[in-house]
Length: 291
Image (cartoon, rainbow, N blue to C red):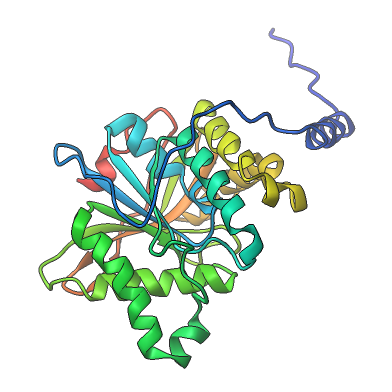
């Protein structure tokens, strides 16, 4: 009779986690990408994904599925750094950090304005329609140029004013597109979980490590809050919440790390969430999600 492993005590496991959280994440020597307010040419032979990142570092926090599309399906991924944060004195530094992070991930990057947009929030949208429409136009022009097959943005209640503002910005920009424009839309989560996720994406270890490494490139941010060291817990928690996809009481999917999304389509001027609940394991193709 096979003997069961005695396992690890909960105290040992917690102590191990605590020790790991005291470590720093090594950042590689990479050649930072160059970017500006002008898009690099799109490769028309490849599908294209557009990522609307509220801040530098969000391209890592919400980039699991875009990274899988790049690595597994040879998609071209463009990251729009919507803002460079709320501190003007940090913006040049954050540009440099962003350039290194995107080099790690293989994402291309563009700014809507030289120093990013300011005051991207629901309150700003309500307060000054003219200024807001200029911001919307700056994003719409990128969508028009790229004609992406998929656009990723935070969900409408993502718990941070700029994340919520970026959602509104993305949806308003899509609404300015011609009525026959269609693309997949992925709503991501970070500060607050999605109320109605319909997709869970497994993140294999190399991809999780790449996202974590890229996150560590944002040195100024992780110095005040160790997002990079805590990132695996965020991915693990998505697996814990996997019963939200479909029904409670189901067995957990066979994945260690994951991200949850609400996937749908932009069609006839509006976002329509998928009625299907879907799961793509770390070693399964994600191509079926966009068929």
